Figure 1 (tube, rainbow, N blue to C red):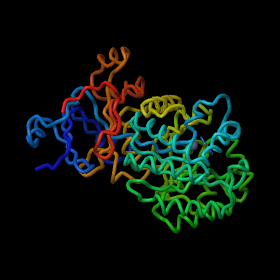
Figure 2 (figure 1 turned 120 degrees about the vertical axis):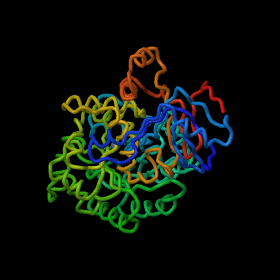
Figure 3 (figure 1 turned 90 degrees about the vertical axis):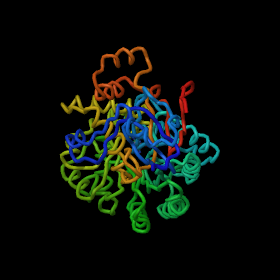
Figure 4 (figure 1 turned 45 degrees about the vertical axis):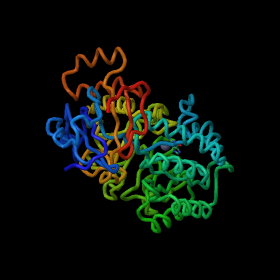
Length: 442
Ligand code: GUN
Ligand code: ZN
């Protein structure tokens, strides 16, 4: 007997196991046009074809009717900045000027707990209304910023990883700290939040240019003291940034070598961007089992460059998709996948829909070392998922009427879709967000 709290009838799409090549993804796709998902105590109890699943219902009418909708695992956003929500779409600059002109002044506001709480609530609502159920998030240098975010995420019972920024040089005085202060504050936050409910802590040095050797030593000490925390930073995003790293750290061969020297590569280390990597850096990422976050809209918006997805596969480096709000221009993973496809096109790489949805779900979960917990509908996985309306606008409806299979539908979603296609978002086995006006029969 299946012990369940909810049973949902809909179409389902997921990838049942992690993959080391795009071909493997195709072999591991699961699509049930008419399926029944049983969930209980926050986890998946079973996903069965309707005809088989209905035999397990306690009463023949005890199911939630979502026929016509497509349910996929919740989206995993492997890199974004919650304090930058309020400055999304800032005009005209590339990375380094963008940071000094727009980013640092906005981030200064997060010493104010009230402001941080207000923006945390707004930010989480953006995640949920876009179908994102897990994210790896930058706060600001202020501990108050992450206290507010974690408190809000705990209320939603979300699986969220975040950390306070660590920064002790090359930033305005109002945002810098000493290496020792940074160590102490991070340590306290880890003790308060890491493994609190579904939350995790990421030690978050902003990037090499705003870190002194003392700061990276402090990061290294924290990693040794708390080996199951995450490490989250930026890497090789912009050519001027890379030149700057060379002048600041002349004794290191490559940008990644700066982090590697302090033991900051490894399992649960996530490097955002990783666009202009040398061969040796790819090899180091692979050898150390580190992950990278591909941030398509941000890389285009700041003119940073084209992420090399094919090389990433060839080098067997774990990868997830990041929206990188606020350099990224949307919270929406469908739109982000659409831009990833175009970045592929500019390099003659075909990003098919099943690969794209894999990266946004199980692949992202694997990049965060969370694939035992989330990313698909295997029995025992945490029940975080999105209910999609495949077509809501007149154009989408027209185009959907010409689609022949699920792959065309998914590709249409990543080309034309946005937040209007997100009907419901479920967290830990309960509906946490729903678009108004949705009719649902229990
Ligand atoms: N590199 C250092 N800080 C940042 C940031 O806030 N956004 C992006 N995109 N890159 C960075
Ligand atoms: Zn970033």
